[in-house]
Image (cartoon, rainbow over all chains, first blue to last red; front, top):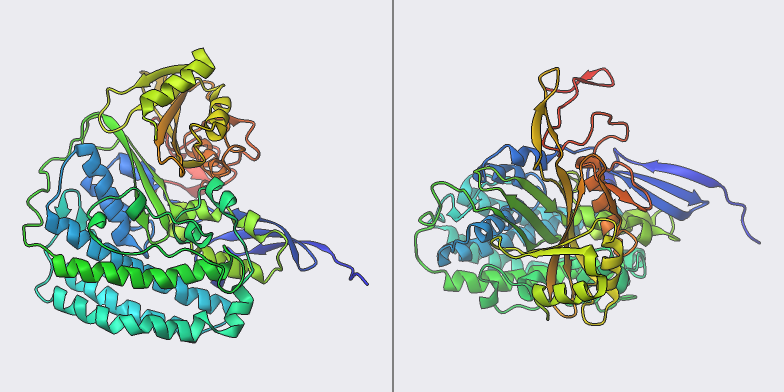
Length: 371
Length: 176
């Protein structure tokens, strides 16, 4: 016998613990089944792109920090790479290595938050505490390097604001050997937990064709089984000097491209980042990190679209220069903004409780969605 | 893998006058300019053609070119007249690994560009953003609403170069 259902519109957010910020989802329900999800964004909008037009090129960097505030180091990295392409300058080897080390530490920190809060959303409280305990150590390393814990202004166009602290390499190596076994601990705690698998496997399946058409990138695209990583496929900085693998979704617990696959990619990527950091620390060359910073940044008339592999996906900067010290236009393609656009496609036909599981698995940061 | 000249030749042969020019003089990035009312046909061809297969749209950006004349109105506010608004499309083929940039410009008085949101769903939100912030109207877009600004924002499109903040929004003072 079919149960009588009722059509209902439900507003989830803007204040909701599992939306990871101020996001409103307008959910159309038929009983408990989702008919459509309409995200309403813009609650954090401060028009960074308009601000950038009034700033000189180096002054934009602190604004860039505040987009994806969980991966600020990588936002700076991407911006610096884009402006350097526009200027046509090379930066010293040591700068590139330090950037890669910082970027990969940031990737681990960002994935730890993603994984920890994902568990929290689904009802596992303990992994969250474990993740934040480990993330704290990475943040201490950043604090030691540049004095700030979340918003760094460390990577500059053409160089870095400071050289490394004399103890940095020792502490970083200590962290690597400390964190290696923790990945297994996290697997035991969460990844292979029966309840967690039941909530995430075979939920929110994202087929590869759909993913590419929607512009999905990063761990979410790799979760759908496509080996695509800008660090390898459109390489930048010194990533071609390191040996690392690109984990892809294999449908170990259910179907390829489900929430569990996307989650597990992040766990595996933390291990790969450790590999890169280890190699970079070994090979770290000597040199001056501020020597290549231009005194006046005034790129020639032209434009560039440059992209890097942010922890959350493809972070692209489209910069137009008209020859003045201020950028004429800065457009940011943020992975979170793009990924949120697929919510409707992923949620249709699922139960209401799965919205939280799906939203957590695509890992968004509202600071970047709204910019 | 094809370079931009080969792609330009293929498009020129197929679409003729709709493909306006290929600009390679700027440093770093070259682009192909396409007529705004034909951009959807060109993009559909580029996605489905066996030699091109641009299956992924990396980025879509709206830009106010501000290439017109500065005029002062009676209140002393500066307006830019006769300029164009442009859309840049960055396309990529994940199979052949080639990339290309397209540009389409429309006059600011009537900024109408055909939508590509049904060709790449990725373009949906980016076109809404370009409408919201730059003010480009995308024809045949499935749902062209504001996205980042409030739905009832009446003061115009903030990324236009001559945009002025309103004094009040719903009785709240805007400049802080």
